[in-house]
Length: 212
Image (cartoon, rainbow, N blue to C red):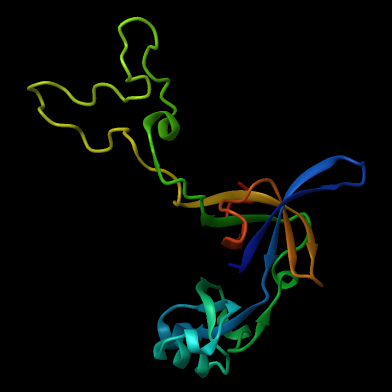
């Protein structure tokens, strides 16, 4: 499994050879550093830990500083473990760029956290149509209405669609086409939308269902 971390920069558009407009999300992907290599012999499985976005050494606690020091690196802000088929080809401190992971025309899965929108009512959160606004309806136009039964079962079932926190959830978009790769500037352009606001950190992996 190939993967890299990146920062969402926003959306724009590019043109193909036939001058067709392609909407793309631009991600500053990597470079990332290998912090730890795990093998079948030492850990029971093969994986690597990659780090993204350096941070000041004064911001790291002792555990973080010691972990990065083993790899000869300064502390990083984000750390991710990625399973690989064979970890023998990696070593601590190694740099991985977007050009090492993706090329134009391939597919990618992107995982991030959606925009948090705070507390929302049922019309915003679940697309309820609202109550009647004609005669007899008081100021309850956006209220959810009845939420439970009477004496049987005398409770509200778990999972009932009601007002609550909207957004800020982990979400993965599958099979996004890699429209372009700018290896010199570490830019990855994916066709379509990617979860999260501008500046959000996302994880981009090679698509697991590309041939499905």
